Length: 102
Ligand SMILES: [Zn+2]
Image (cartoon, rainbow, N blue to C red; front, side, top):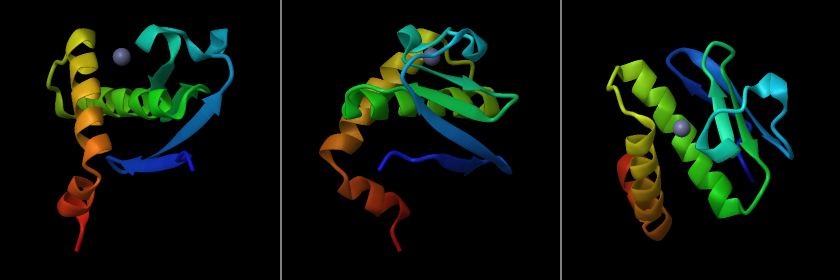
């Protein structure tokens, strides 16, 4: 099941999967596959192939981490990170348990 929210930096972010990003959602990211509204703590993901949605969500999470940590990643670097991290964790789910497990 696709997540609907997450906590980060003392805030709860809402995740919504939508068929079409409308004007209110300020189309501007990931070739219009998703976006994060930092001030509203909202993430929007365009409904499509599940693997693509996962990668797009990871992309938006990287944007949030980048903003929080002040790393200064540009869009190209964010894309490079989302694709490589997605491949790493998709092929090796045990790494998630290894990092966050008990
Ligand atoms: Zn982006």
